[in-house]
Length: 356
View: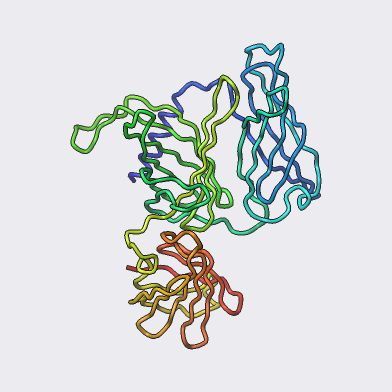
């Protein structure tokens, strides 16, 4: 009920704000019935010189839509625009399945040396089931792709295809600040508008509703595993049409100092299809550190061998293999503190849930 109340308050307060004439670029991947694909970009530019598409570059999972615009004779009148890239077969446009990072990059300079960002989006290619981030407390991942120091905490809640995100940090003056966003999960990814609340009451004061709430940009959620993700914070500038994009690698917070100790406890091993395996219990009672990872020992003799992610000693392992000792073997690739997912030797989807 608390989450529902927070979500409702956020919608009511943010919905009361007046809509701005400027609308940041929206980037969508469109695939027609013939598997021809293209990017569609739309929005409202702050003046009468909206961008036009001049090309596209694809490097691994990073896609850059190259834009250009006139810089002379522009009038300060918001102008809607819609752009489309050239249609081509989906494998030619975006080689490989997974999540792709798409940027709309403009060049306002005469010599072509001053690129600027006008849009960003995450698009999913393929039918791989989306990863749901584990509910709980998260923080900045030390050594991640987009590293950051301590001082930022996040609370994540996922339920029934929805995700809510509370971000606790500091403003430009060093005062504590928190932001809230909620929305639908689409193939694991999500785009949330962030609202900043000010002027409310703390736990030692009589309740007072927040005096002000203002939209403070957005965040795109890119899951890596259920316990690791990249958050793409963006803040548009309604005067220039550009956005400030700040990615941050985050990880599920663990109270245990050792990654192996964080997984100790009772687990139930089952299958996505109840007819494919007999449910069994595991009780990991001891963690043993080894080179490149750790081993968990079950009270009945089963072992779980986990490989640490190189350069990320404080993050959950990248891979764990279960040997139950009776021929039952499972390889887990999606690892969180309370849920493991992978495949057994017969290629059946296998899950483990922590029960404690």
